[in-house]
Image (cartoon, rainbow, N blue to C red; front, side, top):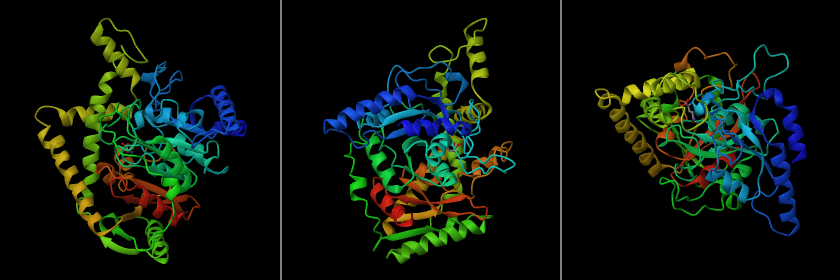
Length: 451
Ligand code: GLN
């Protein structure tokens, strides 16, 4: 823990943490030492980890990287973090993210952007770590934390894992409790894990996951021993490559990486086949209707009365308006406006209801595909990390980054990004493995075979 705290200090220039908790870390580490001395100890005993600042931590400020949560110190612990502490993990601090997890580059944080540890000394501009869980990915890639929590609504674990050259898994929707996690889009939000290896991700996720009566969408299923069963065996598995993911303008190095991944799996005895997910092209527009709609509703609670920031006005309405006007950043405001619009009377049928129907079609595509194959292999993102400043004034260009991660999010399926190669510029590139609902084991095994 001391070594990791020293690494955290040295890596401060990355801006990966919003709150560092060194004292808490040392006292948790001492308690872990005592348990180990008694011959006890959990799955993660004494391992220093980082927590995305979207998980409520009792007595430790939780900001969601938003000005509107300034001063909010939760009086309760999220289920996911409680489970981690019960297994002996040690908390290094709370990591930076895009405000309310809305973004793909960790540039919308009220606490400033995160710089990727892959940025080289002579670079003209810093590289983004990806987002929204950019601080967690950077902390793991920079060897500050052994593992970190993330949340993934439309790719926020998988894409930063790809950009930072580490492994990241989003389990099946319902695998981890959402209780105590600041909500963005409740039907999509899912907690997951970052680590340097697939095996570490399996272990960490095992500690986070499990049924929670406090979240009605949490599944009442036992958590398998993913790490114990991890074999990396793919012999006899059928792996699908969806033809619709060969999107126009995909850089040739991404195509080559994808082919390389397929070849590796073939060499290990898997059968690789082309499949079709016909509604893929509707996934991005569908996601960017549903996610903002749910966000506009979830974010209604930030009224200046209950949490964090309050900017006093002449009367109640003005206090609401001033608080929300000053408290939310541009991207969050954009989402609230889009979400409110698509849910409003007169537009609800044309946008929100339609998007729900298309979402069903997208999920059905996967159900049909998984009758033929055991897992699906795709690139994680259409490019390597870009630079801070790029795509910033073009939200649509930013949204396009989620093209490969969003469809499986809409279908609630488990997905993992595994480091698979380097771009021409020497930057990490990841491949994504998508599995059947509740079949994280196959996702982990196929990822392990690529790793
Ligand atoms: N980039 C996507 C968005 O901005 C996904 C974010 C996430 O998964 N939290 O909504």
